[in-house]
Amino acid sequence: MNLPKFYPITDARLTKLSHAEQVERLRDGGARFIQLREKHLSPREFYDAAEDALDIARERGVRLIINDRADIALAIGADGVHLGQDDLDPAVARRLLGERFIIGYSTHTVAQAIEAARLPIDYIALGPIFDTRTKENPDPVVGLEALRRVRDSIDPSVALVAIGGITRDTARAALDAGADSVAIVSALLAAPDRIAERTKEFRRSLG
Image 1 (cartoon, rainbow, N blue to C red):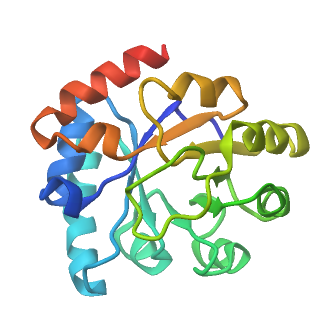
Image 2 (image 1 turned 30 degrees about the horizontal axis):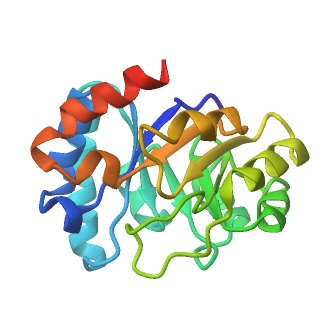
Image 3 (image 1 turned 180 degrees about the vertical axis):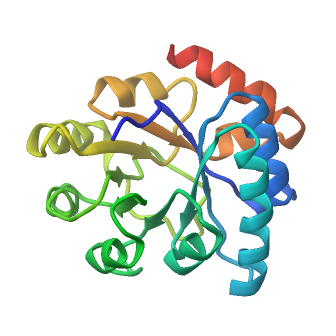
């Protein structure tokens, strides 16, 4: 799939904003592909939050991806789901969601990424590429060389997303190493009142 180079991910604890508010600010900054990531709300609360965020996204044609919860993605009519190593099997998710849904899959080693390329998914996320404080228990840093090895080892039609510690200073290096897109959290969200402004700056820096 043709992923945009810029792939923001929401974080309600970091911003103290609702997912809908974050999507609105990211959207106002020009983001067109956003993932909702929520690890602390109940399923019902996340469903409601995701539904509100989708309403905002739909106003300007933003594609919305739901982290982990294929059931919520399907129920609200989101554009896709992003699955982790311990989530629903991507093959099962594809049967559940159908061919039109976008399915992304997290990997944390070169071997995992190469194996994931054989699955019925649309993109692979590899990381953390750099040190990150966004996750409570992050996996070991894999670095840019791992990105290069994965890009050289998988079918070019499988999109590759770099995630983990991506900033404006490091995003271009990740793209040059073979990533089709960079996923960003704290570099955009750490200053909630400047999310739209930072999004515009980040997009401009990527060209």
